[in-house]
Length: 208
Image (cartoon, rainbow, N blue to C red; front, top):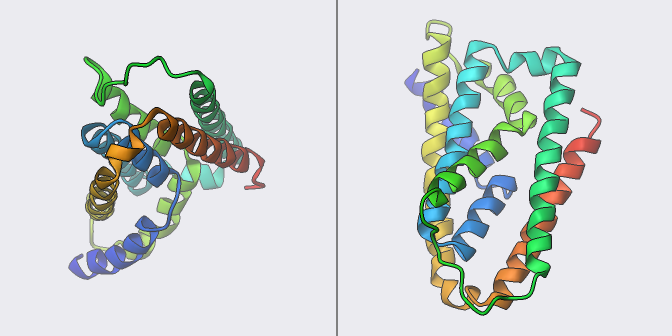
């Protein structure tokens, strides 16, 4: 199992640093809402990774590869969520500034909302599930309990992901004093929103 963990760590590490939707969300949170919200978003993403790892190990996400209907339903649900989220950010960025800076962390559900947004974005991406169900069996030793082994591998991915997000968050924090300006925030929202819509459309229109 130790050898499997190290081998998986190399592959998962390479996947982690490839820019994608999760990275865009965490970076946007770091640039516009501050470190606490960014870390909450990152923890939400990692929660989704753990759920996908457990599902893959339990054989649930194998349904996505076996059933075209299940995969298509989840694909369209994820695409709709991404497009809605991206469009809402673009619309918000077009509104004129109110003259009062938005607080970095809102009272009440600010951190919870950020966590839920990260988790939902990850969970509604069926390609993450397909990635896990295709990858995990290649690294699980035959003698290892599938659920425990799958969770351990997903936890390795989590640790690497959190380390990578930490670098991004602190790196973004160094430039935040300039990026907190209303004009910069609107540009960030427009760019991130456009990326989300593009991901959603690509997900909806992809053949499989």
